[in-house]
Length: 557
Ligand code: C2O
Ligand code: CU
Image 1 (spheres, protein in one colour):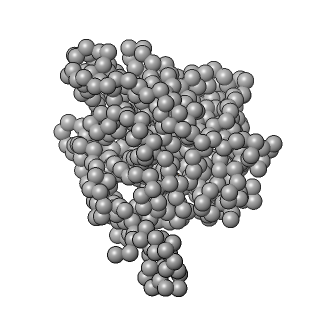
Image 2 (cartoon, helix red, strand yellow):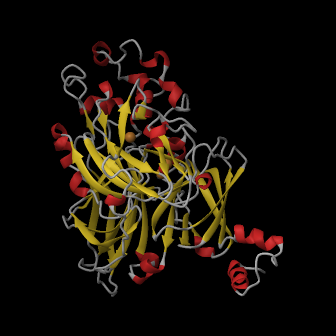
């Protein structure tokens, strides 16, 4: 067997290109993967609530080559599996689409070539396979994967398709963080169920995205005063009608909180430190997480891996798609103690301009009703999971003061240092957009083209008036890279809502999303390396992305 290393050695020893057989040259171009996995998306059922099993969509994972620990299931969960790889490894993942609609996989947060990234233009038809193959170039961290077919992402994730992609490296190992059973993945989601324990989502009609918003549906002053008053919101509106359409645009919120696919989660822990890896895999739910005993949270990592040093927050804000890693030390609690991680109340995830609906007629309450989330609107308080300190265990309890080294790009080196590229979130004719343009599958505008091997400052703004839709919070995600958040600001009149969550931002580390409250703007420093191509950037409120709040950027060589 000619391994890559052996070939390189031979070359170095003077073997030379000419002496090499063709197969070896081929091998040099595409080294054999270290890990090979088959991931199948399929329909199944899972016990979620008591009584009847819930029909779900789920991935089945199988290692066909390499370390058998590369695929781990989460016991009792339809989510996942967890894929575990090391930096520098080459992975090949055969995605088999066992659904009856097109699908694909996006490796959220990973730096991979454009045809490996799960762009909506690269999908596998039902019964077909798409082969992903890439080298793990990212630092250790909590990444994840989910489907990304345009207009259907929200639906496919909602019914169960999402898993963690955990990368480790030497630096992380040197930090000696809690591992094995003390390293807990916690995938947070909100879902709704009907009386038969089936997941409730939007009706299937018009779920193709973009086009459904056109036509007469919203014409003719449908949202006018008269209609809002006279019982419009009652009865049949909840299914299929205007309510459905509004939810399709504004984001689906469930009324049950699931952790790793189970309700009422309780972690049984020992009196020692744990590493908690939080992923918000909800479609549109924003969490404001805090311990109920008032003790601060110790954050050790964000989207793109470990921070340089731990930071403390009295609460943390976690928008859809974002990850946070916590150091949770239960050694100061007595056996028998119960703690709860809660999501605290906050305000202003939807802001309405006073004049827009004739005197605040559509305040949060009405807006909430229209979103079909009257039971648990964004900003409501609720418990997320319980921790029961069940046994005593001696373990080294010291929190490392140094976690990793972050190599910073300098903002001054950005090619547009003086003139950041602007991305304004907009709402046109009932259609989300960025700078007034909605998603086009292969479309990219002149001002969305960047050069390989440069860095830039991108500025996202969420302060445009969106007419009667008001303003909403948007977590903006850029594919294919990790960035640094340089600065933020908020429109004066909208400080109050912003203040109810902003102390929970963790901007210290690498990020692939920047969460923006209404009125907020943020500058981020992005760098384009290794791969030319077409990559999406979009809002990770999945319904927003599915209905147009997504664009491509092109990295030109
Ligand atoms: Cu996790 Cu393009 O998304
Ligand atoms: Cu959004």
